[in-house]
Length: 305
Image 1 (cartoon, one colour):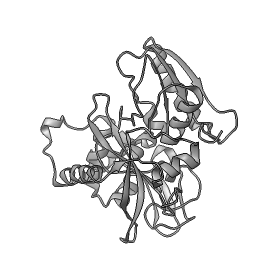
Image 2 (tube, rainbow, N blue to C red; image 1 turned 120 degrees about the vertical axis):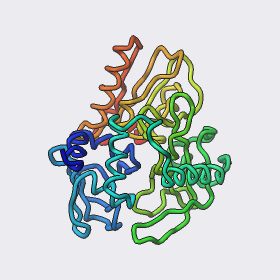
Image 3 (tube, helix red, strand yellow; image 1 turned 180 degrees about the horizontal axis):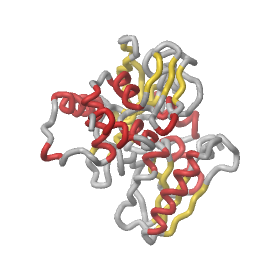
């Protein structure tokens, strides 16, 4: 069997979680015209995922499948892309059989460098202003950090620098997977860049999440950071961010938790609702008490209501 054919077979129908897990921001994966993650065009790209192949089209860049999208976005070779996809879907060789590549080492070094450059959020800095304006939040969780001038690489190779909110995405055992970045302006708005929210290239993201504080025997989960914080403020329970609907489905409850509230998004095409009920079903089958809460208004999440 040809490698390309085998790669296509194992990924078909799975691009909804493969692409975010490999660092593709979900803002680009909404099956509607918008900014292109490769050329930066404002309204020329669409991710349509035909036949579950991760297909996309751009009026300037052309068209392709999920593999070509990852290749162009990250600058990877096909072989490297195929290996990364196999790792995500669980068909990679055992880790002990794989030697760490220079590329992997660079990713880890970049993640550690960015994290070391962050500072605790203080009242009046751009992260505090952003969360205060958006949510009315006064006390920011210690797991959210402030970077005063984080590099943003544009598709044309140009690099700009912006204040940013940085959050560690970690596994249940506390080990790090990658960093989530929200690029901001000095006055606390999202930066005017093609993708203001981005994951740094890192490890596979299944089961990883952003732990926004401690927990009791009850905990909530939501997709985005802002949604999780808003739900926590509204309902008085600790809520962690799963980053995206696809990653929400792989979430694993911490030890001692008996009750989980799933705060789903009210997506127009029901993606957020579907993910919320899938993880709710999984958790309920494991014996936990589970509740799903979704905003009444279509197109809204808990940060919007």
